[in-house]
Image (cartoon, rainbow, N blue to C red; front, side):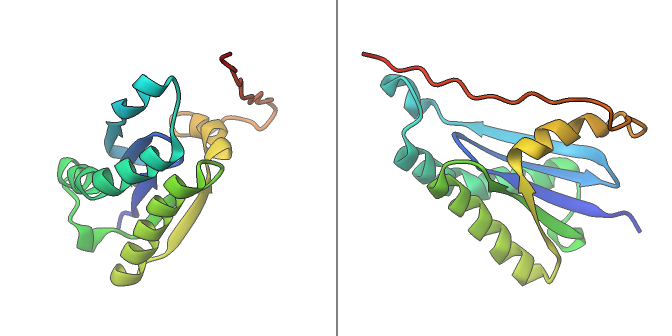
Length: 142
């Protein structure tokens, strides 16, 4: 039987959900938040509220597009860190609730490590002899 994972991402200003089956991505739905444009950057409280509005429709769309019914999900993955605390709480609590209701495992994912390991999706034989440079740039407006 194939392992089907529903993954939820809510670390900053996009709400995303994806369904994969044995490593093959079946769906990937992303809801952007345009509300932040007028402020010149992400406003954490607005991001959290937008995640609360978007998470149910995004997860529903990901499940529908994948063709996998919720009852066939084997595990729930979610972004546990790093990110905006309010945004992370929305995704983690949704994932935890779903995991409990379906009685399936819950997988906490480190956002930055996932960016690096995503290279293994298509290249399974990649040797771990590579470096990954991850940085953040902060721009201050005066």
